[in-house]
Each structure stands twice: as C-alpha cells, then as structure tokens.
Image (cartoon, rainbow, N blue to C red):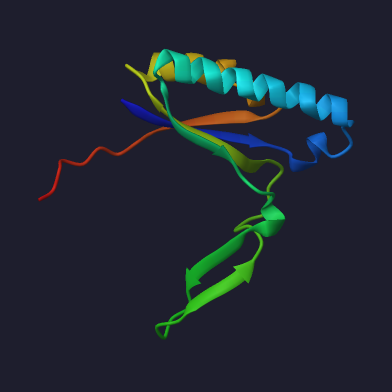
Length: 120
C-alpha cells in the first residue's frame, strides 16, 4: 500500500542555525532516507522550497487562471517536504513517520494514495 508522508514544520526553525547545526540536521535526513531505500520502502521524496516561493492558482472564471504569489493559507506549520512510501499497512507507515526527523519539531501527516484500476 502506498502512503504519502507529508512533513510539516515551522520554516523559521533552522533560520538561526549554524552551518554545523544545519549539516548535522541534514545528516539525520540522509540517514533516514537511506534506511527507507535499503528497506525497499522508499518510492520517492523531496524537500520543498520555502512558502515564499509558492504560487497559488485558482480558477478565476472567464477561462483564465487567477495566479497569486505565496502559499494558499497562512499557517503556523508549512509543508516542507514529502516521501512516498510503499508499505504493508498503516501500522508500518506510522513506524516510518515516527522515525522521521521532522516528527521531533513538527508533524507528519500520512495519507493513503488513491489506487485506481489500470485504464486502457
């Protein structure tokens, strides 16, 4: 079963970190990703640029998109990255979410991926 592991946290958390602290934090993420790859759980994953780089698109009516800079909503935590997991069940996904370095300072949302039958 596939799950999206969505990583939320405050973007400002690492803003004042030293270079050494940033490298130590990144090492935890690289180790976590490698552990998922080695286990065969990892399908995909990436970090996202800050919300200041976001573009929101809505249907503006009249056939044209309404495009605005920035995130859709102001929140205390922002979506910072994701992993796509292939696991046996929700319990396995929860174990991976709990191991995620982001769980220490933010929250991890697990969402099952909608499975559709193959179409011709």
